[in-house]
Length: 242
Image 1 (spheres, rainbow, N blue to C red):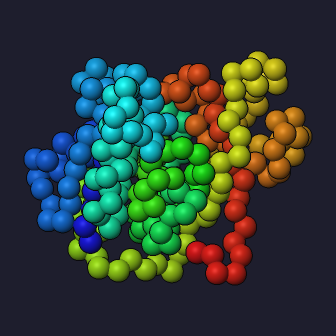
Image 2 (image 1 turned 45 degrees about the horizontal axis):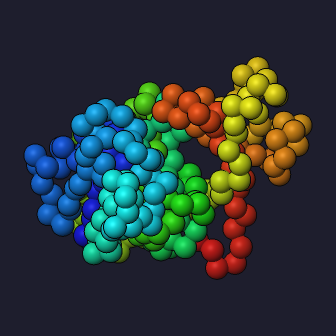
C-alpha cells in the first residue's frame, strides 16, 4: 500500500510534524511524508494568510500562499492509495478521524485498523472533501497516542497490507453545527459539563437548534479560540453502508 503522511496542516499542531520528521529520518518503503504548510510550521502559527484546511481545493495561481499550497497537496494526494493527515486538539478524549462524504469505503477500515473507532464525515471545504483517499487523524494533546513513535509503528504496519478488511467497524458521525462564542455567552455553555462524544442532552440540543442526541467535539479548544466547539449527530447505518 502506497501511503502519503501529511503533518503541519496547521503549523502549531505538533504531532504530525513530529511524525513527518521521524519518517524523514527513518524512511519506510512505500511511505512518503510532507509538511503541508512549511511557512506556518516555521512560524509556529496555525497559518500565514488563511487556514490551509479551509483553502481546498485551492488554486495553482491563487494570490494566497495557502490557496496555492492546497492545490499542490491535492495533486500530490492523487498518486497514493491512502493519505494520513495528522492534527491535534486540546479537547480531551477527542481522538477520532475525519473522512469526506464521498470517501473510499476502505478508509473506514483504515481508521479502525489504526485504532480510531469514531469517524466524522465532513461535507465542508477541507482536504477530506476533495481527496477521497484521505483520513485526517485528530489526537488530543493529553492522549497517550499523542506520540510520534506510536504512529510511526502503525504506519509501518499499514504499509505492508495489500487489502484492509476489519470486522469491527467504527461509529460514524456527521458534523452538524459549529458552536460559536456567542452561543457560549448566550447559553452559558461553560456551565455545562460538556465532554467529547458525550450526549449534550435534548434540552441543550433544542437550544442550539440541532437534532438530539448531539455530541460535542473540540470543546474550548485553544487551537481554535474563535469557536467554542462543534456538534455531531450519529449517522445511522443503512443497508449497504460500511
